[in-house]
Length: 251
Image (cartoon, rainbow, N blue to C red; front, side, top):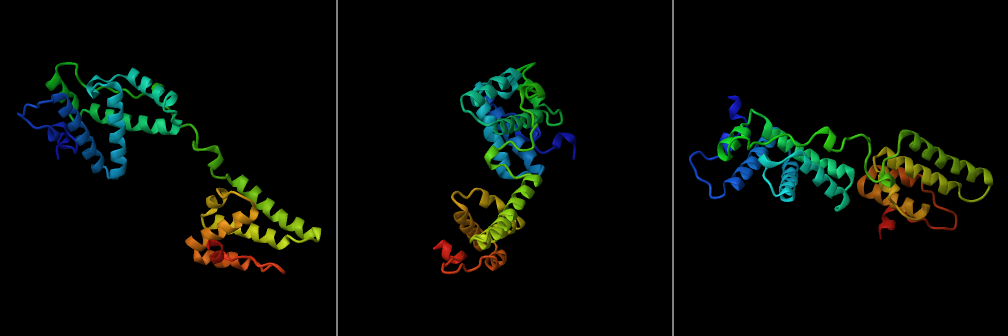
């Protein structure tokens, strides 16, 4: 296969000898079609490809200009609008910028021939140029950029959490009052949930300890029957009080 026959090459997307009624729009659509072909050849999912196309179309709508007319300053204006008017998170904006960067890098890659195609159609100097650089895009500097309240525990925080749960068992047992079995039950539920990858569901549960444990039981009962048996073994029948099991908690 010749280099000019790469998936997404301009001559594979443009019809030779055909006068387009709207040449600018036709060129842009051919670019998007070629970009899709190039990504499919790389094994990307259609959902990812569609998302990037939406980002490119959104930038076209913002600038009201075509890719061979774009400039780096427009990326600054677009990013500022996403921040101040739409109030998007830095991670979301960086994703938009990344999709646009990949599209323009594809256009300026000489192997695909889009610069020559644009100059042939619209005159000398009418060709795409790089517009996304380190100085006008958001860098990925933090390991976690989501909501701080929903971030995963670190290993140290997890150890502190489990140690605290074990301390509640010892404290209740040494006090001579009721609560030791319930505390042991809670500690066991938390450890089983974490061990089976369901710990985030407990962290999102609102309410007191009892409601969190019931929610934990539902998660285990619905997603992992084997783990449910472990939790039930640590859920003793309290004297004079009936404690609902996993199935009863759902009703």
